[in-house]
Image 1 (cartoon, helix red, strand yellow):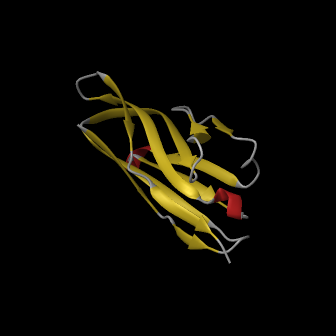
Image 2: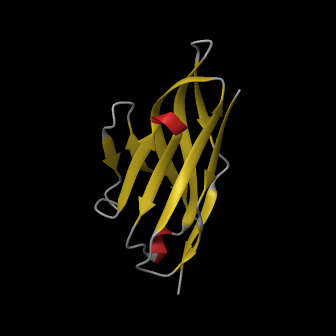
Length: 120
């Protein structure tokens, strides 16, 4: 069993910053590609940022230059640093990961999400 738990969401004013964390736990052998998604009210879930096992990153155009995804393999944790936040960044942010278990099987897992609200 694998569990992904997000934290770090909250209410922030436009122009502010937040740092989201996603901690993976369970019978993990290795963490492969990790992603951050978000879903705003009445909108489809969208991919925000990707980080591969080798550390390569990619971002949605709407967050390029403002968001940074990173990982700490020793802690089985992925981060999303969000700067210069805008009201349109308001959404529930979800962590998603491709992981290899100690049994060497691979699973794709989702966290339950953390709310980010950007408002004055």
